[in-house]
Length: 227
Image 1 (tube, rainbow, N blue to C red):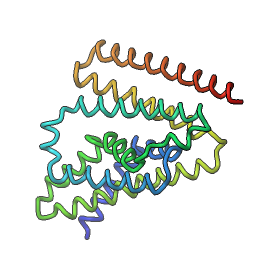
Image 2: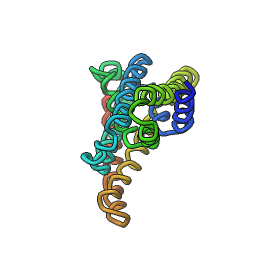
Image 3: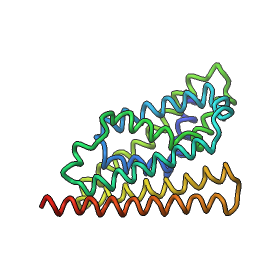
Image 4: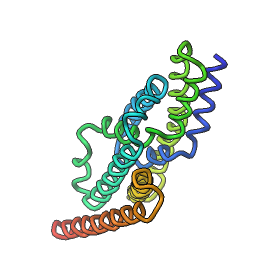
């Protein structure tokens, strides 16, 4: 029991202020609470299972830069999708993913894969041995979920108190910033420190900004035609 509490507290503290907490705040403007709870819980269990059971092996077969690049594309897509929903209020209700739990699972999984909390889980599993693998897995999952639950609840509290549309715009900014910074991390891992990674990131950021401007103007134009 002492080991369980120690690991749970360590994971809880490690996750506080992490990017996945902010992502859950952002996702509260897109998905229902039950979808976020189920999707993030499934992702947490899967991530910690990888960390405790085969995290070290996975890192050998899947390059870190590929994980970062996939995550960056996912973040940028969600930012663009959020912008489109904000501009097309009448279509927003029907544009939500047909599988919201899977969408939350995929986003959370990519965001947390290779993060410090998963590395912490790997370290605990290595030090405590196979005989304590179940305890490490459950404690890591409980600590991570408890911290992220704060992000979920904060998102829904903000949704009820802030002006209409504010949380949606905040979600766009959060996803866009994480998308660009994660892309830079991936390019740096692939190309090394230097101008190349920055140039590619800047080019993608400019193209993404142009796409967002075009999407927003198109939505506004449609709104004007229907009003």
